[in-house]
Image 1: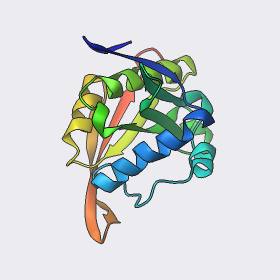
Image 2: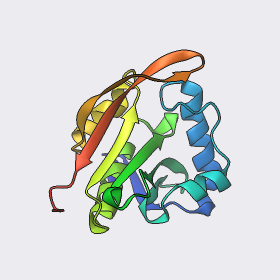
Image 3: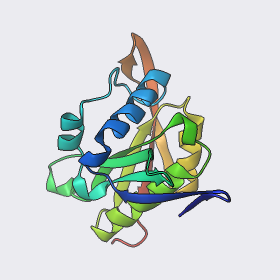
Image 4: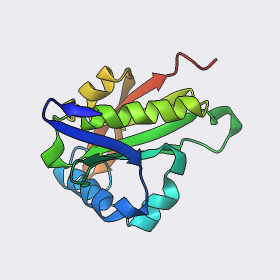
Length: 170
């Protein structure tokens, strides 16, 4: 996959081999303050246990370095929600603006559709304009804003709920 005219990236299944870089990229997002309610990235074991193995990917640069990752979790164990997942996508600060998130979202959409998942959703802080824009380009729509849904460092924060409904799954 081409990220820009001069740089190439490859999207691969995310495995334990990527653990240190994935956790570091997650922590960079945590530190910036507009990516998650988390205040510390989870340890790899916790991350690994929470994410669906068949719906998580890493984007690798030409040098094999992890440029970003995407992963999905179940929304609910109830059978009515069997086709709904929530996802996160994170890109290393040095790799932003190179198509990494777009490539990762495409891989996620392809894998979820192949598995019969009809809705991929995420809650995004409204201040994270770049994430909202890349999701819109990937076919996600804004469902609404959840006002004052949680506290982050003692401050109430809103999230914008975005979703992509598969046009291929009835």
